[in-house]
Length: 311
Image (cartoon, rainbow, N blue to C red; front, side, top):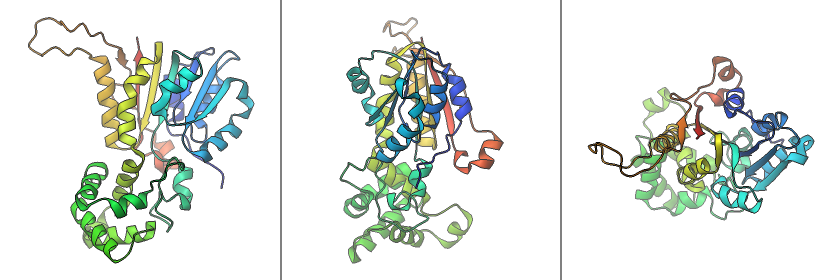
């Protein structure tokens, strides 16, 4: 199966990057190379793109897609949380722009054996980096009931988290839960019939929660934004596309904190901490996809783009 991923908010992201032909840009979630391809088209021979992804399939697909720009492209298999070390290794001190398109790619969702989707029965995997030994099955079978409840409540924002955790623990006493199909049936049984009939897919929130926990998605994002802002040149921009409220809240907060760096108590008449703002938030409200985009790519519906510019 080809690695395909419709790049969400593509035009809006490229426009907000303010690409300089001779600039250096980082795509921290390379995927199939959609955003990177559009960046490369706008670079001169002196420009440079560094693409980072932890998924081997993505690396192969993006390498092929960006073949015509190979003289200005460097692709690294790693996690964007290591961006500082990656750039240091390449002898790069500062960059002109960074893109993150968070969440799961269409390819990862549509490739059943990767175990990201509840729509087909497959091994419970969900690893974004298949070099990691721990899988979703380890979380489902080894976490205690409270920890399962906590991650489904916090990362899935599911009001039936307690009951779902209880059902998982009871089911695994009978036999180990190995597949997405098994887990989906357990979740269905934990949610009242009338709620299942009215809402979206009952397993969606729990699958999201387990995936986030396994891949440390929120920790990685929260720990990386400040570092990435520090790596930007003057007028350099970072564009981050999120797909659920937890990610969006982190990006919004981190951007705001870098815009308002003062740590003095609110009742101080003047600032004494001398912390200077690192830049400003370009998007006071997030940019959301237009109706046309949602019509041809339903997965774009929940996406939001936020942009920060370094000073």
